Length: 161
Image (cartoon, rainbow, N blue to C red; front, side):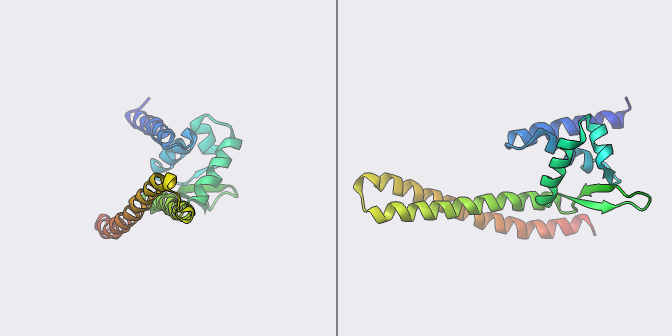
C-alpha cells in the first residue's frame, strides 16, 4: 500500500468515526471522506467498490448527502453513469444544516414555553424557566452562528484568491 493510499484509508476511517459521533451513519462519513480526497468525480460503482460496500446502501447515502447539499451529481463525458463530487461549499453547507437544527430547537423552546406559560401554574414555574433558558441559549447560538457565517465568507475568499 502506498503512502497516499494509507492516508486516504485513514481519512476515510476517521471521517466514519466522526460522523458516527455526531449521530450520523459511518458510511456517510466514509463517502464524504472518499469524495473529499478524490480530485475527480467518482461513480456509484467506484464508490461502492472502494468502500467495499454494496451499491444499495451507498445509493441511499448518496441521496441523503445530496438532500443535505453536501455532494452533487455531475455528468461524465464518456459515460452514462452518474458521477459524484463534493459541493464546493461542503463545510459551510454542513454548518447550515446544523443551523437548521438549532433553529428548530429555538422554535420548539418558544412553543413549549408558551404552552407552559398559559397554565399559570406554580408547579410548572421551574419548567417554564428551563424552557426560557433553552430558548435564550438557542437564540444566542443562532446569533453567533450568523456572525460566524459572515466571517467565514470573508475567510473563504482568501483561500481561493
